[in-house]
Structures are given as C-alpha cells and as structure tokens.
Image (cartoon, rainbow, N blue to C red; front, side, top):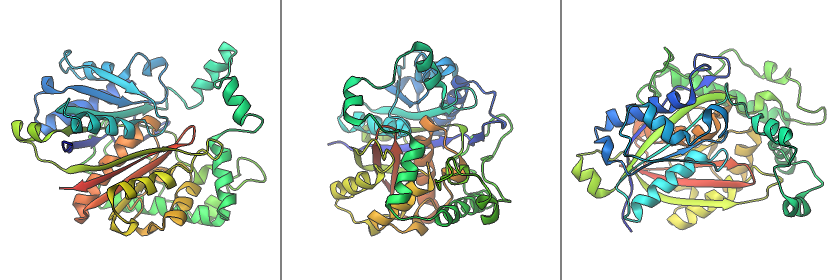
Length: 380
C-alpha cells in the first residue's frame, strides 16, 4: 500500500460564541484556511484531487456542501470538487482518514482534509429545532425499539462515565483547571503561532480563562442537582476551522513538498450509544494493536475534551500518561468547533511533535452515536 504524507497543516484561532469570529460566514471561515494551506505548501491548486471537509450542522449557512462552497469562496479552481461529511464531532478527523485512504489506495495524489463549525451562527441545538418543526424524531422505530425508553444525550453520557469510573466532581474540576493552565502557557510561549492563520484581527484562541480557579469552578451549578457535570468541565461552544494537505510520494517529489508527518495507522470503532462518549478507549486500543505499538510508544496524545470524564476514563483504561495528553490544553479551555475539531487537533499534534522532537502522536475523539476515530501520525 502506498504511503500518505501530511505536507501542510493550518488552522484558524478558535473563537468564542460571542467573540471576534462570531459574524464570519462559514464559507469564508473555511476559505481562509484552504487559501492559506495552498499558499504555504506551494502546490498547484488545480492538482488537488478532492476537498473533504467535516461539518456537523449542515443546515442554514453550512448547508449545500460547505466544502465546495468554501473552496470556491477561496478563489480556488472550480475544477476541484468538494464533499462534506458528518461523523459528528469526529467529522474532520474522518476527513483526514478518507484523504489518507484515497492516497494510500493509489487513486489520488493530493487531497485536502478539512473541517469547520460556525457555532455562533448554527448552534448545536439547531438540528433539534428543525426536527421539532418537522414533527419527526431523529431516530427510527428500530432504533427506538433497541435503545428507547432512556435519555440519550452527551450530557447524560458524561455523567454516566463519571459515575462508572468512580470520579468525583473535584477530580473533574482539577482536570479542567489544568486544561486552562496548559492552554495559557502554550499561548504565552507562542506554541500555536506558526499553525494559526489570523482572522478578523484575532491571532490567538479566545477560550482559555486566565482567571479561573478551583473555587470558581466549584461555584458553577451542575446541569442537574444530582449530577457532577457543569459548564466548567465541558467543552466550549466555538467557531473555528482547520485544514491539512495529504500527498502521495509522487506528489511530494513532483511539487517539491516537505512532509511533516506520515499517516501511520487509522482506526474507527463503534461503542455504546447510551454512554456515547467512551469510544476513544476501544479506538485507541484498536489503533495501537494495528500499529504494533504500545501506549508508552506514543509521545503525545490529543484526546478531545468534550467533557472531563471522557479523557479521565480513557486514561484509566488505556494506561496513558496524562502528562503527555493534551499538553497544550484541550477543548475545555480552547473550545470545540464540532466538525472543525478533528483537523484542528491533528494540526496541533503535528506541530507539537515537531516542537518536542517526538516520533508518534495519537489522536482520538468521542462522537455522537457512540463512535470514535483514532489516528496515529509519525513525525518526519
């Protein structure tokens, strides 16, 4: 099988719901990173075989195949097609998988893997409002017969995980505080500078809170009186986009490209849709088994912080070192623009491997419906 190389990886700063990027149209958000990706890599954009973009809320300004719209909005050749995919929060990580698989199969040479979410314009609840207006459920009779009769939500899933893994609210809040601390350190040390493409005057991520504390986190009201889950231990509603260029060995030679990383191993799994958020555990195990690697062979992990219990349960079951996990903070501090997060995390991980000289990075994230992707990249 042919090799797939990542030759470019960029992202926007991640904005908050009411921040500097709140009024940026999703197509322009995506166009911004696509244009910069082509500029930085120096490839002929007409040579790109496809643009694969993850986006969860594919309605309103994000409808109509936002991958195609963003590419054209960037002023790039109309001969290049685009496709938008939805694997929930893992949408743009799946875009990276599809791009790599296209190159590995030998049927494509240059594929853009990207993702975006404009949650200020298309809130996470928008789909529910549409469903309510139509008067139909999001799940059919067969699904209801199998899993119905109980509440299905990411919030309940996070609470169930915290209970099953015997976590305390204090543990969750300590983890969240550390996420903010790491993110602030990363920003102050300029670790994100090279990967970020400034937009609307915004040059750094807006989410990290320098003034947060355990006392402030403890003062937040839980979503339900008998729950541990508060806004402080959950990812932030955000605006952001990321893009990577995946190239074949032939394209690397032809366009004189410099590979940043090799796509080493890909895995995707399904898991319990009621717990919903536990997928990174079996996904990590599957990827490591396929790669012939152990957990201690991985130099850095990016495990999406949808909720603090997700990462803590994952670390317990895999034996991963939390010191090497989300070393520059995670979504609790930096935000989680749904369909854009996979590409953003991959970009962060590649740059972190180059900063530290590590060899392997592993990325995974929980996804709606009880799923997870896992990706192992090797720094070159």
